[in-house]
Image (tube, rainbow, N blue to C red):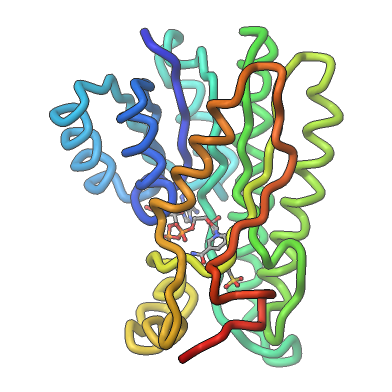
Amino acid sequence: MSKIALITGATSGIGEACAHVFAREGYSLVLTGRRLERLEKLASHLNKKYDTEIAISSFDVSDRAQVQENLDGIPEAWKNVDVLINNAGLSQGLDPIQNGNIDDWETMIDTNVKGLLYVSRIVSNWMIENGKGHIINLGSIAGKEVYLNGNVYCATKHAVDALNKGMRIDLLPHGIRVTAVHPGAVETEFSEVRFKGDKERAKKVYDGFEPLVAQDIAETIWFVASRPAHVNINDLVIMPTAQATAGNIFRK
Ligand code: NDP
Ligand code: 8X3
């Protein structure tokens, strides 16, 4: 089998775009996400287009037992993972801390922090056993800065930033590369999820400027993954040209 990339959150946005780019580059793929139908459709499309070998595994990263059961259940040959893209994540709500919805806070913390940890704990052990690997964590500009009402989402992405550094130190003796990619505004389903299906409000986030698209991030992740083995990009912040900081977007 060719090199293998395991992508969490491959049913939409950045994860789905990564699946396309890594398939194009000849990787075999383990695609995960909760929406099984989307995984099946994507796998069939990529298999036809690039003749890609694909395993799919549908689970909720925030459910520790599901993560364990589903990753354990992947056929042994597929555990020879070269690249793990820890992409599954979400934001829920955009409210001041005093009005925050506690269920939303828990969902963000459970998905963006605990989910990333559950997956990394298992896959990093596969990588140690295989003597190779590269973990690419999706942080955010929200992991570098804090913006109005971003409170808990920003906290989860700051945690990803810290975990990215910690993983790099801990996995250093095993030759495993660890990178964080931190995008600014990327137009995906992210804002629809944040605003719980309110498409009009989601669309407004990107009004008056040209945001990044998922393909921009996927090509960047490919660049990071395709450096020679002795090169590791530790941390990469990528923004739309029209965005200077998390809260500073120039709109026409
Ligand atoms: P999308 O909403 O388009 O995609 C999010 C993906 O995460 C989906 O495939 C979704 O799959 C998956 N996901 C969410 N929750 C879970 C869960 N509990 N278990 C398993 N999978 C889950 O958003 P993006 O592509 O934009 O986001 C991808 C990553 O990039 C996230 O970590 C996000 O925080 C980060 N990011 C996004 C930015 C943006 O502006 N869009 C900027 C900076 C970072 P499913 O629902 O099928 O489970
Ligand atoms: C997504 C980008 O600025 O909405 O992480 O937090 S932002």
